[in-house]
Image (cartoon, rainbow, N blue to C red):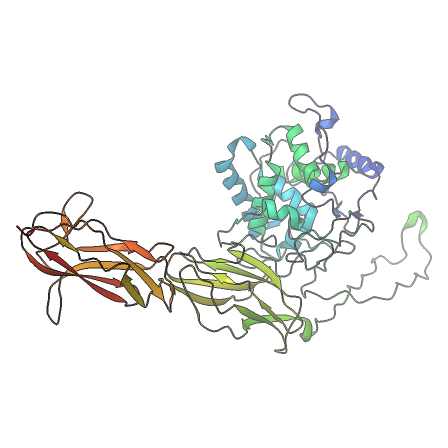
Length: 554
């Protein structure tokens, strides 16, 4: 008996009688019955405990697929749990999806071994929430070809959850919707989101990211999922429904008895949940209505058999191709010029990107994520390294002001269509060192010292740029020789390094917040004469200061 698709559970819409009948059917057929902690079993099977409040559920208690596993299990009870090579369609898990579950188990085994997370639990939840990412319709990176969205949680048959992400993940700026193959609501993803495929992003529509996030969520609170009570608590925290728990438990037991890998995109594709996104190959389309089947005019045989030995072939729903004007074809630079700023300053140019449809025209309401990458401390306004915004009616969206940090050099900013497998628009930005176009002493005292003594007066300078204070500017101080091509002097005044050694060039000096720089003490050797100290700033400003070494007058 294969599982029947089409049955759905809405919040409060399914009675416990349905679940009881399902479990009884499983038991009668020696199928993988769902042994719950609350069933009173022995050993570690304690009561599941209190259920968290509705607003803390990972899915927001959104609808899920209530189909149960086939009554014919992959292996008989007690048989080996090694994966068979082939099996029923229901026991097959798409390759990338299965790999994501196993990778999540390995990752959490390294970071939280006490949780003892089994990948089959992730598979059970993934089956119930999205039919294993719609039968494994994911790209090479594990990202779904189109976002998987649950119904709008507007309180009309479902929970009421107002928007928490400005539509960044679910495209709805009024209410939230569960997103991705593990069906996280945006507010939960903001807390638990993970980067499971190491691409620098946390994408709820990526099966590797979503599976790892689900694993961390299930392991929260020092749970040990090898204990039935803790496993029940974990599943109930995902969706607060005893029927949900029984359904997940049924698939969990089913997958523990054996499953097999199938190619991506060849798994069982469930129909969309009422009010959810359409899982057809063409995102954005909807099934066309079909005429109801005409009744069979022939009388039925006694016992319910039809006079026609062949059952009628159902007519598959047809789909309309998406309109070119509504299909996202790519993204492009919307006129952003060169991105250069001095350390600590804001970039004058702002990054702007345009979303295009299949006709080359602008496409509105496209979620775009801007991410700063590279060895830099530059950030968007507000200290963020990534922001998600939505294109306007002209198809464009502008990133927040980009603020340079103190690290100089180049870095990149990537703009991608959130949750889509489209090429990113990459911008290169450069942070240059702070500069000064003028530097001068703050006083005009004569600087003299006796041979072998130190100069009594300190040397202080101030740097400016276009008349304004130049703070944080790099300055180099060098004792130089006379002549048209000065070089470092090997005699006369000198500085001392941290070990007390004689040095005549100092680097890594910087002006303070007020643009001033006070040099370290200067010492004189035994050679009398007039010498020169040259100070040069980043930006080319220079000042030469005279130092005199002479014996005091008798």
